[in-house]
Image (cartoon, rainbow, N blue to C red; front, side, top):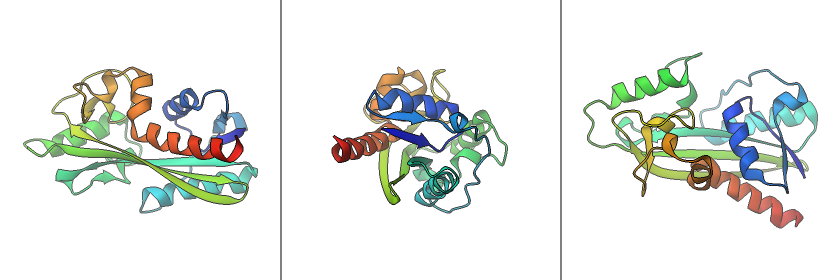
Amino acid sequence: MELVFATNNAHKLREVKEMAGSEIHVLGLDELDFHEDIAETEETLEGNALLKARYIHQRFQKNVFADDTGLEVEALNGRPGVYSARYAGEGCSFEDNVRKLLLEMKGQSNRKARFRTVIALILEEKEYTFEGIVDGIITRERSGVGGFGYDPVFRPDGYTISFAEMEAETKNNISHRGRAMQELFRFLLSKYA
C-alpha cells in the first residue's frame, strides 16, 4: 500500500518511514515534487492535520495522511500547543522555541507536560483521525543530541533520559507520533490484511 505523508519536515518523514515497515510505502512530498509550505491556520491540532491532508489530496488525488503535534505544558496553561512549531515567532528555529520555553519555565516547580499528535487520514475519499499522547516533564536544561524540536527538554514519564538521548527505535515506540502512527497502521492493516 502506498500513502503520501503531507509533510516537508525531513525529521518527521524519516521517523515515520522507520515505523512503517515493509507493508506500507510512505511517500514524502518531495517525491511528488511538492515543496510548498501549507499554512497551518486552524486553531486545533485536528484542524491543521485535516487541512494539510485535504490540500494534498485535492492536489494529487492520492491517499494521504498529515499530522500536527503540540507540546502542552501544564504551568503555561497548555501552551505552546497548536503553536509549538512557531512558538518563538514565524521563521523561528527549534533552538529559538526551546530557548523561549525554558525562559518561560524558569522558576516553575510544576514541570508537567505532554506531547500530543493528531493524524488525519484521507483514504478512498473518507476521512479518519488518530491520536497519540505521551506524558512527561520539561527538564531544566537541554540534554541529548538526537531527535528534533523540543526533544532535548522533554523527558517522558517512566524514563530518566530525554527524547533527544533515546535511540530512535525506543523513542518511536513510546512517542506521541509513534503512538498515533501505531493506531494508523493498525487501522490500515486491519482494513487491508
